[in-house]
Amino acid sequence: MFRIHTRRLAWQATAVVFLVAGCAAPAVAPPDYDAISLAMIKASFEAKGQATLGRLDQDPLQRACSAATAPSAEAVRKLEAQELATIKPPPEGRYLGDWKEGEKLAQNGRGMTWSDPADAPAGGNCYNCHQLSKAEISFGTLGPSLYNYGKLRGVSDPSSDAAKPIVLYTWGKIFDAKASNACSIMPRFGEAHVLTAKQMQDIMALLLDPKSPVNQ
Amino acid sequence: MHRFIVAALLCAAVQAHAQSSSEEIAKYRAMLADGNPAELWEAKGEGLWKQPRGPNKATLEQCDLGRGAGVVKGAFVELPRFFADTGRVQDLESRLVTCMQDLQGFNAAEIVKTPFGKGEQVTLESLVAYVSSESDGMTFSLPQAHGQEKDMYEAGKRIFNFRSGPYDFSCASCHGQEGKRIRLQDLPDLTTAKGAGAAFGAWPAYRVSSGELWSMQRRLNDCFRQQRFPSPGFISDATIALGVYLGVTAKGAESIAPAIKR
Image (cartoon, rainbow over all chains, first blue to last red; front, top):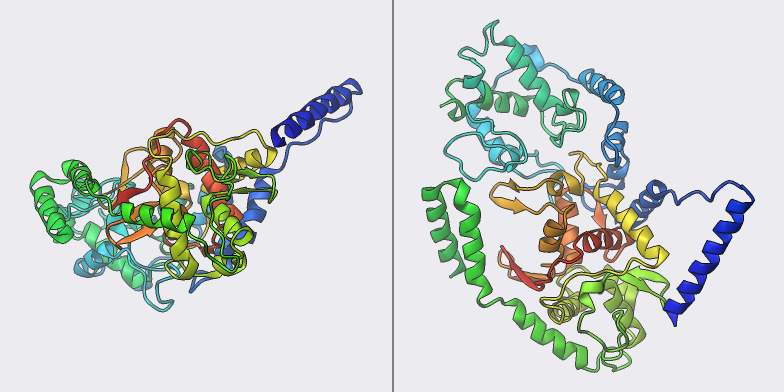
């Protein structure tokens, strides 16, 4: 019975379309699915633990990178410039910390879920998506392999002038991956306050210290 | 015994290196699937379906899952769908809650508030296992004729791609490409019929790591937790819209639910 009912409605709808077209009146606008889905999200979620409802408020970059069509080259340039402006150098210009601490952070996939304590520091999540040291075979493939990261880029002394461009680029990538690739799936660890400067220094050492297992 | 198999698997994986680890895990799953504990939930669910329960002391045998009152076979592969009596698109869990309220007299709002693994949520675990098992081997074919069904598909597609939170993640961040993994865990590409079928067509599933039977609702809830999002309400519209998007994308794929997962 329900099916017959819809079919009748569909016929009536078709008739209306013909009539409207015949009168050359403006066509009925299709539903605004962006607005519908946004309202649905707002109505469906509830705050839990540290995961507040504010996390559903997109910034312009998140909005642009959620759209069905990728942002234009012009929009990408603008977004990347905005992200680049947020990158802060480490305290006292010290870019590298302790690779051993960096390895622990790379292994640690915890942090910022509603089941994590709000005051617990987040891990780096690196192995979830990247290969790093050769010893760790449980690595993800969402990001490129970073095995031999410093070695392949010719970094023998990370404090040298020659290494400076790579050091700055790498710091920028960890601090805000979107500065060089607007819709990258990598989190903005510094910009979004996921990791502290000290934690990022330690991950820098894991990638660039010649003694790090990543460069063996 | 599971621990022993995992240990054996890890040794094998170390020797053979990472490229064959997926194969080893597939073998491990095949071994486990020989005796999928989900069968226990299926049997319990069938019993609960036919047992007079709730304030009305009624069974669920008159519950309409979309193919008419009392028809269980084939219902799972057509859900979520529009229901004229509630005027809403509903997934399996949401429809079961409607039947528990209308037929048995349970309070739907209370069930929605109950945490997973507690109270009537435990009943739902068994019911979803039973209902899904009655569509084993059938192919997904969600109806899309009703306007609300189309709206939910379109909304679900957008929610799938909605990036937000401290990590900028959406569902698509992990499930929008083929052949990727997190650590050693393969990630299905949920934008293709094959990937959506393998994932949507497997839940509800028995989860070896927790020894529990998880519904699709619970699976989605944990995805959002790891996405660093707030918590999606049980049977909320956003979760049902995602179900429609995944189910429609899985068109033609075979249902193996309730499956077995790591």
